[in-house]
Length: 261
Image 1 (cartoon, helix red, strand yellow):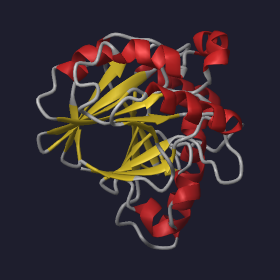
Image 2: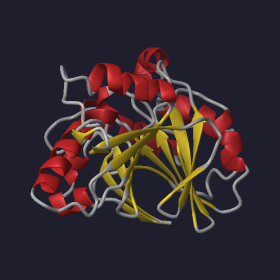
Image 3: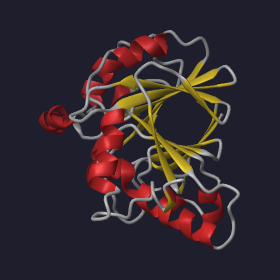
């Protein structure tokens, strides 16, 4: 399994892209920045988006991916015309009602036609695995102000846990501990410790809260834990706080990272 970091930050500034991870060239975990981080040919290889929730920093580039895909298909390349978005029913309903609604963005679930759309919305359900492009995906509910799931990704007997945006939570660690060949965890850590009140209010983690949660993880210090969703404005403070924890195999992601699991 190859995981390319397209964006790993919880805010957008020059040089800092929003959350999106590309698995094996064709599967996205969230879609904050693939149109910024990939060439048109690389975008055209995407077949699936596993969407954790509908906050803007995770859905922004769904709009631009769809636009680019539709234009390429109109140019005559129909070899990979559709992207399927896999998310909770309530999230797909939000996309239909508030995003792909002809007011915020054209409804690409009906373009170029309802029978042959650019985007297809597929409802998934917690802890019911589904398979896409040879990878088994399981959604796991986490602690966020809107409906949100992390994901267990299993490819050829190797597993990855992606917590998505979450405050302290339990079930995802139970599932992580049950995996026979877990290779990595990608975990929310958004704010420095002095903003714990904001992390609690918004359903995110600080380094201190993250460590309390990681005590539930049996393989801490052995299986790498990669942090994402850091706010660029406070990155230097968070870097110091995370380094002070002195935990083996714990570090923040960057946009040049590519994980081979």
